Length: 159
Figure 1 (cartoon, rainbow, N blue to C red):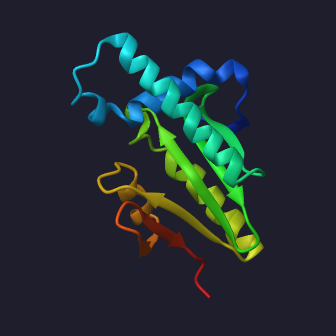
Figure 2: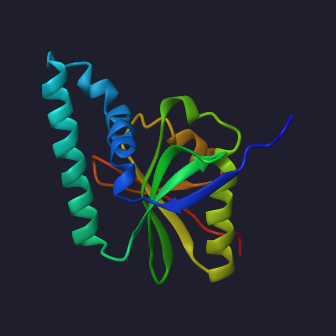
């Protein structure tokens, strides 16, 4: 069996349709609760995605928006902000069918290796019930803060 290649590349304007589809997949449970027609749902997703991107650009102007590719096909997005003391994963989203793909932990471990080499932590926020939280817990990320809406998880190399 051939191992799939996992890689990152900067997201560009040509990726907008994928990013919208990915964003919609992250809100699927919420969207299932509202009786909107397709056009209403699409407008909501577009507005929320634009608002999220504007927030990241305003608050984290040096953050990178990267696409996660498996064998060249986009399956997710990583918004990463490299700070002095941490690598903050602002957004780590995957299409639902990719959540359990064996190649995904490889990508997270690479970020952990980068952090270890730089003497930094890796952090990420999760909302309760986020499907990816378990994956990060398996990789030894620990909850360090809870603001009632998000839980901040952190990984640090053993000292």
